[in-house]
Length: 495
Image (tube, one colour):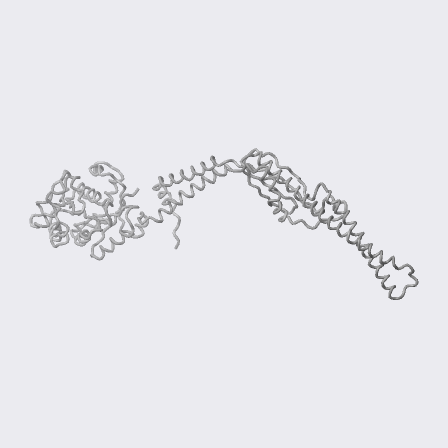
């Protein structure tokens, strides 16, 4: 089943990554604007020439040229023979020349782009004139070459005809000719007649080529001269701004989406899909200074903790669910503040609560209650289980008691995985406390899994859009393997 597009979730994602999206947008759009306003302006001029199938000579003689190949004519325009004179005249300036044949016509468009509008116009007109001159001169040269060839042939034929006439003049008395002589005579007459006919044809062709060689215009005409362009064709400022704006939006949003896809952390929808009903509460981001305000002021955070307390109250209805370990898949997921606020909330409801700091790796709860981390506490209780009550401290809050982690000696972590910890928890279950909330290190550390397995339940704290998916999977597998019971999942730092 395909996932539906969630506009609200996408909008939250964009808001969350707003600094990145805005930065990328500004960079892309600024780059487009800089390019647009710093790129030299390009002006474009166009001239039109028409290639016909008749020129002055063909019109005079009543003949017609063959079909005009416009692609060939375009190649001629762009050849060095046509452009050479133009480059010689305007070679010190920047310009680009192109040509194209207009569809279904014998018209060629000569296009010139330049930084100077005057250069664009002059070069376009210069190319058109050079093209006409080249076509005319080429035709004149071809006609001149043909005329010279014909003249040479006429001289040859004239010489041959004169020789044949001399041979023919030797036959004075035609009536007295023998049979063989008559045959020779007739052959000479035929050769003279044939060469005379060919001579007359060549003479006529020489006159035609002579006319063509003197022609002043060919079959190419300028039908529109280039004019001075007043507006640049490049850059197109309005179009560039619009495209730059759209491109900046697409890239910035796309980068945010791509970043989201690459992220290994989880968001609320994924957590709800993974844990389902086990997600019992969502907690907004808070500061440590808000801790003492709980129960005294209303607010989103206070309401969230109250909701968490209500959900857990059902689970701790009997004494079998008395010791609750609060842990997380990784460090810095905010579990310690949740454990402390949850304990304080229960205390405000009239229950007698003991909060234990079992985070031997990084204890952080003692300063909240104005105590030192190395004051006698849990490690000492594990070494002297008969006097556990000596290590329970009163706090400024009614009904809330606290057990520090104790002295952080080398055996502290080893003690947590021994029967001593089980003994401490067992005695606390039978104590007068209504609930015992244990703040552990993250489940990246082995002792936390052990503490979870000997507790009555584990409250798993997962940081929204921060905790890595792989660590959540690993943590839940470790707890299941240790036969620990996950009584609920709390999503922390929800924006």
